[in-house]
Length: 608
Image (cartoon, rainbow, N blue to C red; front, side):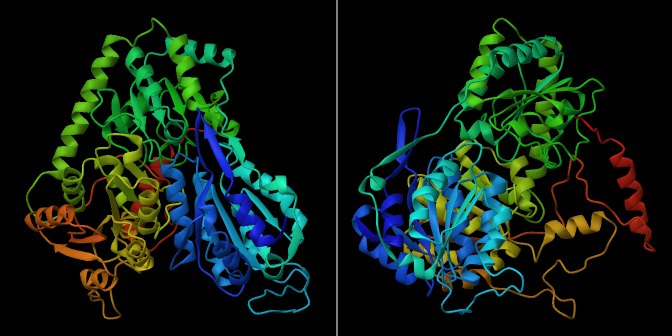
């Protein structure tokens, strides 16, 4: 079959499928892109020619945004399907590097197809080519190498015959997945080759569910039986493996409290009696108190980064032990854990069977209930009516109006506030990118989630700082009829990092949205949203917010609710995060902050 490289690539992607538990879906659902001279004659022509292949194309406004949208789609599809993203050579390609890093760090599959310089090197140098004095074949696309799970520069047509199956293997592998980058020289995309016809036969990539080793399950079960104060941590692996029901059965049968990470929130419904809420630096009083005294921690599908572990200061029991249930061996072994290397659902089912007849002691059950009750009372205090409108009250109000929606966020103070305050009913209802905490992820993610599930309302929370970075995809949402609600919290700048700045003893510097005179810069966000085609409302009080949300809920299309909040009303922290403070300073407040920091890090536990 004689096709160009780009035509062969498109035809191949259109017949790739992922399958798990008998459920089959397209591995590459479509293509996001922005065309330039590097990909228009190749991939652009191929996508136009092969419209019958049901590989839809969506034109975005920003290359980073389209990677974020592909990430969000993949996350909502539990990593069983994703989109490809194509860009031209040069700045279009490097705009995708941040998205690639976010995808790889969050372990979400995305396929990136940046154009590259001429493979034949006859036109040399060309527009946007990086010239390196010691590396003749260097390209700006080499910037993808450290942030990709698989990278290949395709310089001959037949290289696709080996590279494409490897790319699909990585995209469909629950351990190795992340950003896959195939750099495609602009001349090569248009070059023809005689391809074997069977290369384009439909291919099914079965997503594996490795079972746990019986010996590891037996040891883990015995550790739980011996523990007086066990605690389960639910991470993203619970969501991606579809293990929420298995987790609930394990917790209920054996009286195990379950704490949540950002990626694992919603694994148990918020009102489940054994859901003790978030833990760590962004955690609450219940989970953190139980974690501090836990003698056994069962970490399920979590990387145990600095936030859930409070920078390794959280677990203070002198004989605390860990069980790591994870499909990735390097995660299962963290914190010196007994490693149960397996799919989360398979491991939890096996663990429940091995614990048959075991239940938690009654005093511990009472302590769990009391800790949970105290935490719910604290949440009620944070969101109670009265006074000026705060971010916390805004979140609670939106949650009340949209209880079934998918909530989206990524950066600033809102991930921590949402983790504490949002009442998630299921894993799919909470969607926060916090592996990379990428400002600008939020609105593109709304597109991705809408494409994944058109039936469910989507609410995008975003601060004014992130909104100013990447708001252009409101136009994309309007163009393709992908409606969602944006709750734009206007607090005059980067208030999250401003709060951290003040906690370290420094006054405001470089974070609030102020001009050279120190005055706040007025921005009419509602007018801006309307200019991009969205319906918009503003609210500066509880009554105005409720009225705006009610109207937005009954409206269609892209809707933006600008909420003016008091930035001084912040949700307090209940855990430690290791951010070093200047060891020497002439500022007394910094010196005091350094003393507090040195006291805090004395609690760090080096667990191997």
